[in-house]
Length: 129
Image (cartoon, rainbow, N blue to C red; front, side, top):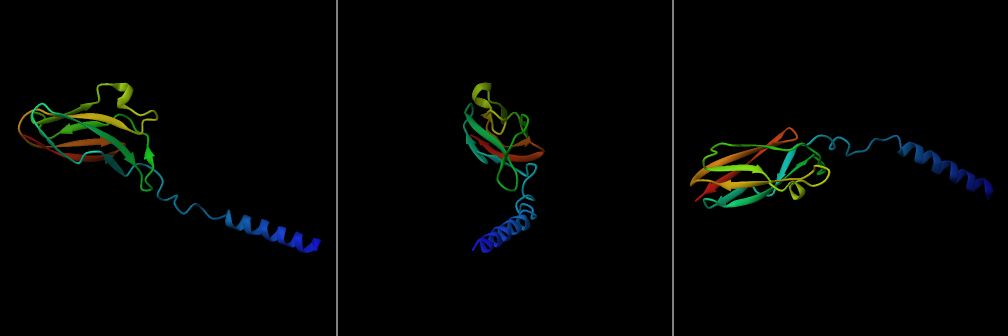
């Protein structure tokens, strides 16, 4: 009976060693950010209105990645502009995985605001009435 137990123990160790030789099947999905997760993709504002936008960088596996402060480039700044959230205490989540910004309607018209963070760019379509 003792030899059979040692045999099972040896087989278990051998099986564990064989399984640990394989790499993580999701390792190719992990890495740098591949897209931005924006809380707003389309905004309909009145002149003078503001809307809070949250920005997160995500990799292929859905992991949130840390990144430096995003940059904003409105196509028509006279129609709508975007600035970093004025209150830095609640404008950035610790670990730099989420930033907030204010989208501001300035004058009637249509525009697009491009947001770049972690080497990835996304945009928000803005209509100001």
